[in-house]
Structures are given as C-alpha cells and as structure tokens.
Image (cartoon, rainbow, N blue to C red; front, side, top):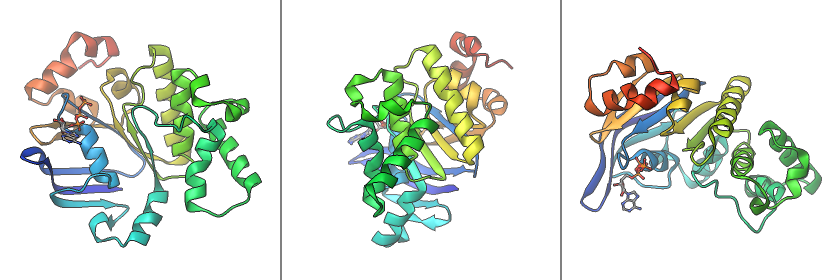
Length: 250
Ligand SMILES: Nc1ncnc2c1ncn2[C@@H]1O[C@H](COP(=O)(O)OP(=O)(O)OP(=O)(O)O)[C@@H](O)[C@H]1O
C-alpha cells in the first residue's frame, strides 16, 4: 500500500533520513516507533506530501508521488486520511462542519447529504449525534481525538495516518481509542500507519512495528521479532519496566 525506497530528507545540513526503505502492507496496522527526534513525524509528512524529500521514491497504492500530476495528486488524497497529534480541528467550526471540510473540498453534494455523511462518520468514531453541533472547545480531549478521527474518515479512505493518537489521553481513554482504531481497521479493511510512543498501543493493536533509528528503518516486523532485535534503543525500549507493564513479554 505504501512503498518507500531510498528516502532522504533533510533540513539544511541536518539529515533526518538517509536511504530509508519502508513497506506498509494492505490491511495492516503498522506502528512506527523510535527515539525522540528520529524523524517519525517527518517520515509521515514526507509520505503524505507535506515535505519534499531530497532523494528517494514514495509510492502510495502503486502511484509514484513525485510523478503525479496535480490532478492525480488531488485524487489520490481522497484515498487517505490523516489525524495529526493535536487533532487540528478548526476551532471556529462545529464538529459537524469540521467533518464536512474534506467533503466540500473534494465533492459537490447537497447540504443535507453532506450533513448525513458527517453524522455517519461521527457514529463510526463512537460519538453521539448531538456532538455535531458542538464546538471543539466544548469537548474532552478524548472526544476531540474522536472528532478528528471522524474527519479523517470523511472521504472513506483506504489508508489512515495517525500521529500519536493516544498522546494526552488517560489510559482508559487511550485503550478505548486503540480499540476503535482496530475495529475500524478490521471492519473497513483500513491500512493504518500509526506513529506512537505508547507501548500499550503497540502491544494491543499493531500487526507489525517499524523502528526508526540511525536515519533508517532498523527493523519492520511483528512485536516478537522486534523485541529480539539487537539494538540498544530497541532493547531498552522493549525490555524496560514500561514494556513489562504493557505486557510486552518474551
Ligand atoms: N520544520 C522543520 N525545520 C527544521 N527541522 C525540523 C523541522 N521539522 C522537524 N525537524 C527536525 O527533524 C528531526 C525529526 O523530527 P520529528 O518531528 O520527525 O521527530 P519525531 O521522531 O517525530 O520526534 P518526537 O518523538 O519527539 O515527536 C528533529 O531533529 C527535528 O528537530
């Protein structure tokens, strides 16, 4: 579903990725982890086209992003949704209006159809219908995440990019959110690219885990294999007390 080859990204002299390869398989939930500043968010931004790589190729659904015309790029954007770390909802719009933003951008449809679609996405994200009329500031952190998830589902994407979706949620809210992502992935066949620091999330929902380090993907494999990988950061992260508490046992 996503194929990255030889990716190089840099900010001036600061090289973030160099010769990075990554595959995201259709229908899987891939967890992307790595130490702070290893370039998880930059990788996500490069894949979705918010950041231009210095070298390498990125294919989504078999289409080389660099070779796309503007129109092809616009159309391909319908195939994926993004949930950024802060939710990034428009504060002056209601939740319902927020969910309608991508629909307005991509389709000409009647107001009532748009409203109905927004309500169905709210339900998919586990929110009650009355949330549509509320403003983001009226919602709890967990509800805001769900509202942002509903917006990222607006165009019925095949692929979902989530950047630290459970950051800032309490453990119960985080577990419920993880469950929702897993349920959506299974029922809609969604492929999920999930950047996270949350060991609970990795253990609970990810089919495979890609570890970023030394400007590359060090390993991309199921949890058990990743835990056995001989690298200091991997060993410390997956065998420390937090990992044991999350149930990541050999
Ligand atoms: N717009 C930018 N301009 C300059 N440097 C940047 C920019 N965005 C990111 N960087 C740098 O790129 C590197 C990778 O950043 P990134 O945000 O991808 O890290 P991360 O792995 O997501 O970290 P964290 O886990 O702390 O969120 C960092 O050194 C960061 O300072």
